[in-house]
Length: 136
Image (tube, rainbow, N blue to C red; front, side, top):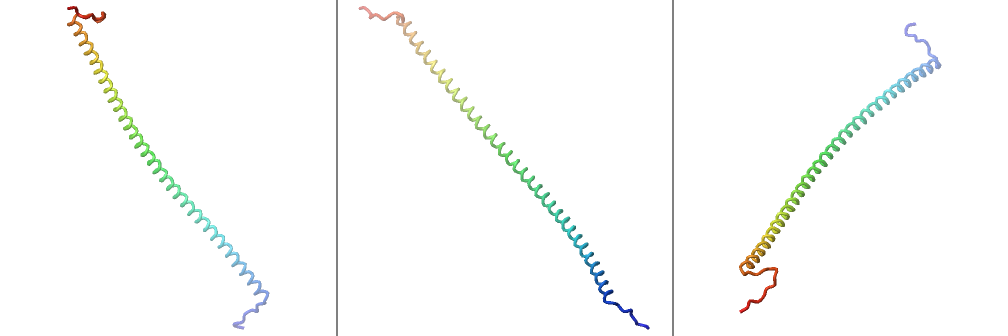
């Protein structure tokens, strides 16, 4: 009986089909779980890298903003100091001019007083006595 195969019953075939189908289902489920796990791990890795890149970029822009504001503030302070110096210089010039004008006015007053005193001294009149007309 060479070449004789044992007869397979339909129940045995059905049982083997169910067993093989179960194994395939189990493998497919296992592979799906692995695929899902791999997907989630890669997704988390991409999201983490994106967050890190966003954080680094945000930090860079915040640093640039801080530097720009600091530069603007320094420029403002420098201009403010220039304005204050210019104001102080103008105030000093006005004060000096006023002092010079006061000194000139005082000098003029003294000259007028001196001329008056000289005229009285040469004319022989007393400034405290009223003048009398000269007799002829």
